[in-house]
Structure formats: C-alpha cells, structure tokens
Length: 304
Length: 310
Image 1 (spheres, helix red, strand yellow):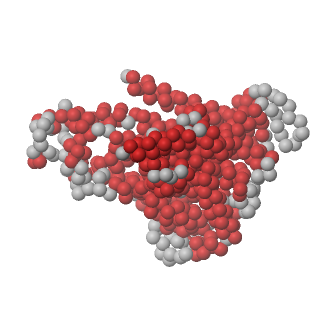
Image 2 (cartoon, helix red, strand yellow):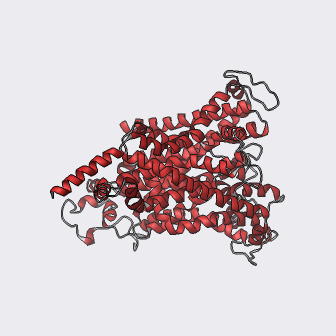
Image 3 (cartoon, helix red, strand yellow):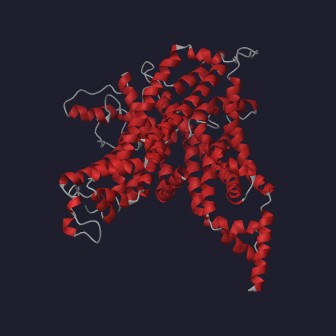
C-alpha cells in the first residue's frame, strides 16, 4: 500500500511536470495559427481594404476613408437587395422555426423508430447547396414540376414558380429552409428531450390540456434552443449564396438578387474590390446586429 | 398507437378530463387514461406532422431520382413520377464527362486532405484545451465561435486576394488549408468536450503503471475517442465535400475545381436545361455521403447536438 501511494505521488509529480504551459501552447499553436490566418486575418484585411479605392485597372490605391461605404449606400441596387434579403431572411426564419417546432414536437412523441425518422429528417444536411438548388429547380419547373402537376390535377392553373418574381422568392425560401432545417430541428428536439416530463404532468394535473401544456410549459422552456435555431437559420439565410445562385441566379429580373449576390457581382464581375470589401463588412455587421436582436428578443420575452 | 409506448409522454398528453383523474399519487387506472390522441383525429395530430416531415424531406430526392431516370426528351412528355421507360442514360453521360471525373478526384483529395489535416492539427489542440491550464485556454470560446461570426461568403474576397498573393489560387493544397481553418473550430470544440469527459483517473492509472504521457494519449485517450474522432471526421468530410462559396472564389480550372462548382458550371454549359443529367450529377455527388451517413447517422446527429448545445 505504501509503495502504491509513493508511486502515485511520483506520477502526480510527472503529470504536474507535463503541465508546462509551453507544451499546451505548442499543441494548440498550429490550430490557432491556421484559424487566425484563414478566419481572423481575412476579416481584418477586408475591413482595412474597404477604406481604399482599389481597382485592378489602376496602380494607385488612394485612401478614401468611408467613401466606399457611402458609395454602397448611395446605390439603389444596395437598398433593393437589402430589402430582398430582409424578406428572404424573414421568410426563412418564420418557415424554418414553424416547421422545426411542429416537426420537433411530433418527433418528441415518437419512441420506437425515432432514430429512423430522425435519420431521414437530417438527410438534407448532407446535400450541398448547389445540388439542393438543382433539385428544387427541377421540382418547381413550371411545365413538368410536381407541385404544378398536383395543382393541374386538382383543376387549378399551374403557377409560374420560377419565372415570376414573387413565386421565385418563395421557392428560394423553400430551398433554403429545406437545406438548413435539419440542424434547427435537432436544436428544438434536443431542447424538448431535456424537459422534465413531470412539469408537463403537473400542468395536466392542474387542468391544462396537451396543447396548453406544450404552449405554456414546453415552448418557454426551450426558449434558448429556439433562439439558437433562429440565430442559425438567420445566419445561414443572410450569408446564403450557393442556393440562390444555382436556383435562380438572382432572377427573374433581379427578384431574388440578394446582398450576397450583389457582393459577388461587385467583386467578381465589376472588379470593384474596395466596394466589395465594404459590402463584406456590411454583411458582417448585419449578421451581428440580427444575432444581438434575437438574443435581446429572447431576454425581453423571458422577463415578461 | 403502436409506436407510442412511452408512458410518460402518454401522461403528458392526457386529455382535458385530467383533473377528474386520480393522478396525484400512485398509478392511475389504465382504463381512465384516455389520451387525446387516441381517437382518429388525435392520431392524425401525431402522425400528420411526421408524414409531412418525411414527405418534405424525401420529396425533392424522389422527384430528382425520377427525373434522373428519364431521357431529356421525355421529361416534358412523360411528367409522371415513375418513368415509362426508365434509363440509366443520364448517369452514363455524367460518368462520361471528363469534368465530372476530375471534379470527383479533386473532391476526394480535398475532402480527405482537409479531414486528415484537421484531425492532425485539431487533436493536440483539443487535448491542450481540455487538460492544460494555460492562458490560451480562454481563447477557446472565441476560437470556436469565429465561424458563426465570420460567414464564408464574407471570406471569399479576402481569401481570393490572399491566394493570389501567395500563389495559392487554383491550388488544392491552399483549399485544404483554408478548409482546415474553417473546420478546426467545430472540430476542436467537439473534441474538447469529449476529452474532458474522459476521467483523469484513467490517465493517472496509466501513469502509475509507468506509461509516459505520449503513451497514455496513444493507448488510453485515442482509443476511447474513436466515436468523437469519427464524428469530427464525418462533419469535416461533409463540409469540405459540399463547400461551394470558397471553391467558387479560389479555383478557376478543372485542376482544382470540386463537385459542387462543377455541377454549378454544368447547368450553364448544357445550354437548354438538360434536367436528367443535372439531377443524376446532383444525386451522384450526394451518394457517397449517404452511404457513409447511413452507417454512422447516430454519431452525426449526436455530434451536431453536443456541439451546438454545450
């Protein structure tokens, strides 16, 4: 016994010996450097470059301060694409949250076969945005698309899904929600599964029915997960590019020309690097502002 | 009702009549426990959303599958879900395209490259964050949240300029490094959680038995971490395999272009939309992931959850 205690003391010394911080720094340095280089540095670089008038056509890169920002804000294209992004994000968040709550509650009821249905529900997560967009382009084709076939079978007129601006925006929202719903749904389901069932039972004993128990007990309890799902859906919608680009390319008549597509147009089509960098920063700020808004909303609703 | 066996969830869903039931203590009588979903309408309330979920998820796949088995000319003349004359012609044409084969190879190289580099760089970092007390530890949260603060669409231009500067434009190695940068935060976050869950006593016991720290990591920690590493590997692979924005920004030729970009370009080059070949291409890019995913879906679902909720 005595021998064991001395050897464990020795090992403690050795483990303490291993606690030299330089080893930890050495271990984590490569990861830190790679992330700083490819995630952190580009943002600072973009912020810095957005203050210069950069064009591949001229050697000079004069400092223009916030000139690029005022240039962006003064174009009607910016404001119209911002408005469309607003509609798009709103649509994605509302539809995405509604579906993840409905599906989440239903999945929470399933006991046997949960893994199977959950497995199906997560499938869109492994589809790339471009592939999803092409699937939706096929599905919502005006001539042979399935929704139109159903409509025509029921005696209605087919809807020009992709050639009408209003409907095209709807299709883009569907496609975006389809690709991003799995994670939002997992958040909601994860939240529901942590709720102590006795709380719902207590509510039932006190005379609430299943609906009221879900609405007044379960939903407030999963507020953090709902916020997380909102932040996630909104983040993905604000920064969505592949889905929209491959599905509509911004058309018809710019009806789905979002901020991100405007960014690509400025940078890669017009080579207006300084302005594109300003746009990058604007998108960052928009994202951060929306996230803070959702967190504030949760706090405000929570204290009520 | 066959699938709803959980008595607690049944309790939770009792009818409005509940106050009249003796529920405060002891077992309520079976016969009294009418459930709100016991009638045909109630059953519909539970099963309709599930049916909708399956339809919502599988619908696009099934329609895509159906179109991919048709001849381009039949897409319009035979709009039914089950083709009159199914053919593998579209798949043969996809596999025949040089663009597809080179993009497939690039995707394989870049996805495996990114996941290997991510694990090699990420495991020591996660171990350091999980086990050592050092100042850098406090960066972990910021480090993990960075991708949520910095969307990829905003990185396209800065990284494009950086790539041009360091001659990394249109290079697979540069893409692997960039993807590693994107993947590391989530990977490290997941693995830190996992390493912290391994009891320290196991390592101490190994140390008592005379193992060096490196041997302990190799023989105790890593074997226990295989589920976590598998989760990270799958998530990393998926991310690299499906990435579009950064590939669009950082590649130009077929030498480094991956499948999503090739698919995006193909829809322009086919002129009049060739729906069968597009859908066959799209499904073929998804297929490898589905095959992997079916085997380890549980790890993916739980890994995603633990990464998100912790």
